[in-house]
Image (tube, rainbow, N blue to C red):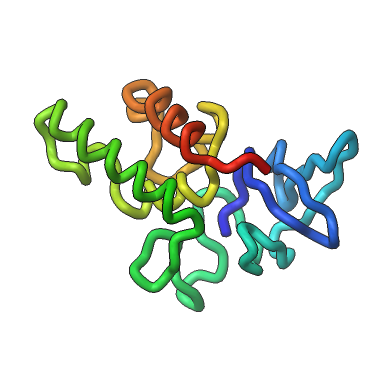
Length: 150
């Protein structure tokens, strides 16, 4: 699992949100406290145990399915479906193929991360500055509408 700001995870019995990714660790905010979690640590994300990897890459390489691949189950199927619906509508309005707006793997990563800020959305593979400017607010609105309260 790629480390990213906004990622919600459980580690060592603590549940929190990643607030910073730096060097070989992340800062996990737990209530009013913060703690450092080393990259490579086993954490739980959405009830799945995964290795926390560096940003922009899936941890584990070829050993396990990548997020958004046919082998990996969707972490948040309702959000993934809502994002696919948004993408379909947006691609038709823009007159371009859906994969140009966003690939399935990008939508799956967004569904898994459920980012709440543009900065967190920018950490998703497939979202760069241009797509952030063009689609960022719309994607965050879909995420907000379909994310369950924690």
